[in-house]
Length: 136
Image (cartoon, one colour):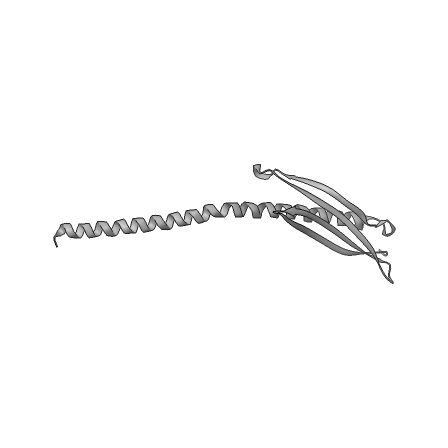
């Protein structure tokens, strides 16, 4: 072949390299763009979990600060939370309840705080349990 035959082979090889490179780039871009909804859902779940954990710890600290005789079960209370972080708007409704049970044969009470909420059509729940003593 002449010089023009080599130029055609080089041009064809370069075209295949460019098409392959663009194909890899497009596949990578589709993967990254497809990951954003998953990341947003995970971020929303994390915010709800953190808030529920904060509610549970707050309720537990309130119960433990009371005198031993005053520590008692409480009915389930509805607590709403609106998330406005970074321009995202989200809302979660939590149910917070406390169950106190005497431990037989001792001057101890088992305190359990439960926080429940719905996320992505699933019931989520955090439960903290500790023991309150009569003594200092």
